[in-house]
Image (cartoon, rainbow, N blue to C red; front, side, top):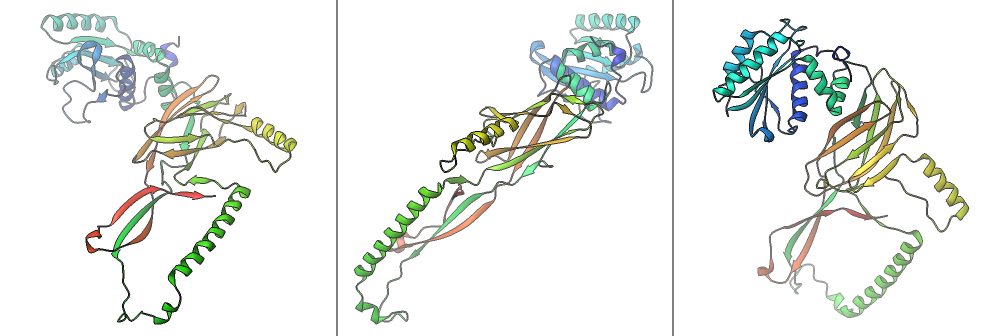
Length: 394
């Protein structure tokens, strides 16, 4: 186990509060609901961090006391009494109060806390416990994610670090949808008095012109069909987006044998793609195809492991300080989403880190106006608007 003197204490009380929030979120199994209480200067009722803890059947609070490097050197009995008194006003009533301190273990203070705990319980109050810095370090080492956050975000043990970004920013614009607006108008009937009326057209039977048009259209369609077969054209959904991830070794240590997982919530994406494909073309010599596919396999770094997870495996064994690596994935957002959380986990021989990015979704609509003629006024309708994915033929 890592000794307490191998993990430095936080450099300020803000970092210490953040550490307590993340750590007890794991201890109490409430990482998604644990919160800091109000803001500095407000009445916090003796509680800096709080959460509803199911296993205790109520709200629990943490009073964070930064010591040694901040102000006073140790926790005092007077401070304890003052914070306990304030915590009695916390609403709803607390089940448990933790004094978390960066002060070193002190047998006298521990004895005093045990006495206050029994006193409070006997008076139908909350339980009271103390966690000194050595105790906190033991808890940090039990939870790898907490240790990684503290070590790498606050940089208190070593300087191994990676930064992960996407497209250099946190938002994209989806190209693109088609918005079809249908306008209904009355069909115009020509009369002798119509200024656009041309009597000479009566010399050409309409049914003959129509038949000739149909024959021409059949020829055009047959040519298009043959051309499509020869050129292998296919449909392409233009909602697909290319997302580029960048990993930077921003620390002072060499990282070895790295890989990373990228995950999405299934309800936010319709499809994802590792953008990998083999060459398959009947017009190319099979030997050339086999050689090319072997080359693609050797250089491949992306693998789609599940429907909503992609794994990146770097072909480079060593990732040195200051180096960057990039990879691109394909993403088809689900209809109606406004934001897509991106969850990532970076792994290497002796270092790991997790994080979250956000893709903001701002759909782009290409408008198409369509006019439909109707015979009767009663068939006139309001504008009809249909929004569909833009599908092109390539």
